[in-house]
Amino acid sequence: MIKILIGGSPCTYWSVAQKKGREVEAEGLGWELFRNYLIAKEKFKPDFFLYENNKSAAQPIKDQISHELGVDLMHINSALVSAQNRQRFYAFNWNVDQPADRGIMLKDILETTTSEKGYELRAPAVGVGCRNRREDDGKLYRRFETSGIPKANALTTVQTDSMVAEPIRIGTIGEAQGAAWRGRDNGSAYEVRTDGKANALTASGHQSRLVVTNQNGEDLPVYEVVNGEIEIKGKKYPIKLPDGYYVIRKFTPTECERLQTLPDGYTSAVSATQRYRGLGNGWTAEVIIHILTGALKDVPRDEEIVVLSMYDGIGTGRYCLDKMGFTNVTYYAYEIDKPAMTVALSNYPDIIQLGDAFDLRRDDWALGKRFEHTTEQKAETPENPDQTTDLSDAPEEIKEQIIENDRALKEKDDTALALLPDGFDVVDQLSELLAERKKLHIIDEENLRYNCDIIALEYAIGTLRR
Image (tube, rainbow, N blue to C red):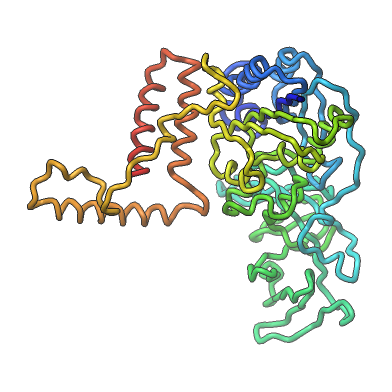
């Protein structure tokens, strides 16, 4: 039997992307999350351990991680094995070389590209980030930023952090390429094929109104780059792109799966919003496979492997072992994000979910033991779905009015919930806040505010679940 500890504590508190309250020393909630990994290492006593986090963490934090784990950190860019520029550091107790560059570019993972349909464009598809910048007039303007390389920016939970500038060909294109010039009532139009279907490019005399209609019927704006500048809403900005026409769009969930070197459809069990979020928080599978291969290359594929995964996310670690050919894997996972667990279990129902990683601090902890928390208890469902008020002590003559008031309040709540973004779950959001407050309470037990917050959040979650 071989025991493996894997994980990467949430980088929210350490990443340079954290604008306020970023931790730069080995203390605070970010460090407490890492301490859970250390506690797991002490209690689980693995033969091999692997830890990952964002390269942008402050050097004092990285130095202390190296000291606590007793190994040097290795920096690996996912760009070597994927089409994504993703800088991460890894700590593990065996030796492995940097992965070889596989030469994978954005054009290799896009679901639709013009360059592969009969002709080559001089400009490759490149990664783009979208930022809002305040100009001299005090207004916020959308800006596109790119390094000009044919790799995606690192995926994050913010979809516009990583987009793609996809070159398109506008002009006289021969019929052999499946495109034609046609007249329209509102002007002229070019129609181009980018995926085996006609993607209509329409124009009404203004280049800023050029759009491409993709296979899903969505209109995507076309931008022209002239002399290294792009025009957005009448203002010109420098951009590192060759002159030409571009569609700048978000990656599809499938493309994000490919950027993380996961199979197409791996995250399809949840909404698009949650797919982006889970992939942005996840690992690049081929990097993990490369590292684990250094430790397990000579291990028989039917050897018993017991894994403890901290902050497991969408189960990428389980996928990696599966792809490596291991057939006798017992996989324990600490994770509290419901959509992430849904993805993991939809692919590997044998994953044993254990809940909150802070449970490792309990004196009665044992591998495989799951502790029930208040927020995990299911509330009883009333017989009348519109009834939320206890009517046991109410006079008979007003019970009907109480039920009607409850129904009206429920309709009001349903209307408000309908306005929330796709995939947004109020209970999930409050549960995340509750988990955070509990962690803060562990760190600072004398702070009365945390305890009051916990009581209030537990009450709110219990009420919403009725």
